Length: 483
Image 1: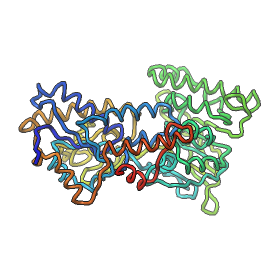
Image 2: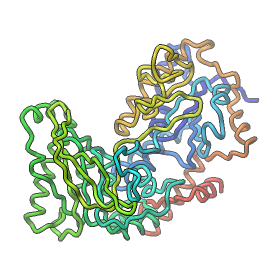
Image 3: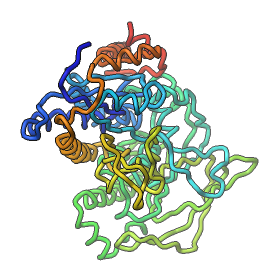
Image 4: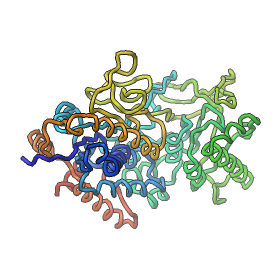
């Protein structure tokens, strides 16, 4: 037995939230550990149910985001740390239980992210041709257990949502396959699918006004540069009153977004004036309509399939309050994609806050509680949540860093108060978890295994003059990692 005296932390989920938290924990422990009576050494074991790390960065964001490779590179540098041990292909609740982790770790941090869509909740939502964004994103990102084919036979499509995921989905539906392949790591099945995509007209419906959308400026700039696509807007949507302009000006990000949307309005006018062209002045063969103050109320069908979408005009006041007008319009479409939010994953043995869609935690401070709310909610010692698991599906990848600092501060405070300087796990043998998993026939993929998968993906990409080409078959990933 090789018992050690370092702190032992288990993190569930190797996406940005889990990796950032691991890094920040080690940094803060190095700074504050001595004065807190904790020492400065810790071993962090990072458990991920998929065969590869990076979660949302690899599988939740469109492949053509230019910043993604930089984020993935930063996460990889963090994982290349001898105090962080990666255990991919290990599923919490199935391969290892909460009690087994608490026996071996001084604290357990959940950074489990989100994989499911919030339901659409409109009449006609169950028609053939209505899709949640999450499953479509899984397809084009090559999620290991996702669909391998996607029906892209609709010539007219609708996308519902006023956030970045809606923008991603709309952009991929309007994408030129060769252009996408050239600049991203998409696998062959996605290239073939997008090449065969029949979509010629896309309607993006945003319930509130120009100043209340939740797009990032980066998303808008990517929308502007779609080869063969004409952007079409409604002039009236940009007729903002003084109060709305003043309110939007108070927040820097909102102000930048609104300025970019006005730039898109100018661009759309130029495209029309130039004879229905794309951003480079070339003839456009696809049309992308952006509708603000437009709330879908029903998906209309025939023979069980989508045939149109019914939309009600709304108005939005300066404070963001939306009012319905009773004016309706129908648009012929054969497919509807809804990107109205994700539902973060639950975790076996942990209470879930259904109303706010995250793991139950005390006042948003990341300390896991026995129930979602109410007087009976008690803090459960040694259990924490961060990222979407803590706060629900809001915020960008960068938001997870500020989350991580808050949760790590709370963890260190609690550990410093615990007996024996926070070292409370009964089993302190770092090899104990390996023996337990081996006894169940579980073969984790470690950081060295991930590097083998990554090297193969880079080699496959290089054959086609690309930086990277994704492996999507989990069995192939395992074979590469364990070779």
